[in-house]
Length: 264
Image (cartoon, rainbow, N blue to C red; front, side, top):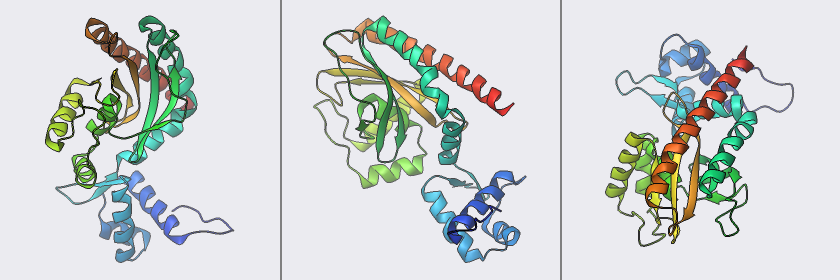
């Protein structure tokens, strides 16, 4: 069980971490009764904590056994804890290579349920280009990048988002119908990349690929290439997709090697 410090402590937090640790190190999936017995915590308390952890994706529940295992939120945070220091420096040369070759801007970002945050970029070498400062937040429905993250989201969580929020109509090309949007996300999930033809910003096309997909299929990050629709289209765009997929694969291998090295 997580140790308490000698200063201020929040009992519920300690209990929540105890539950997570028990599930993480358990040899089998555990239910509420199992956890209450092992940790000597009232079942009602375990139930309440479990519900909160499920809501944020820290735990998932088996539809067959109704028992619990760690969820994608923790896997994603674990990936970032292990490789977050290196991911930007490892990805940057690959992003610079793509930016130089295609003369378009490349962004890298991470996702939460409130939006996507740009954590790295490589600007187009051209004088007239599309750019944004690091730390810029864009909406979860923003074009190709939003599709990448949402396509890997658990159906229950995705349905909840689509029920609670309407898809903004950014341009005339934005897919706002929830069912058509689900179909688009399924297509993205299967093909492994996303396209955006002036769906988020008028006059701008984009492509995006997942970066560092974890064991749940949830990307730890994604990067995307953006350009003016007048020039970033057709054969150039299609070639850029293949190039981005290749570079993303190489980045993933380097991160994997770095992670193994850290663990050794």
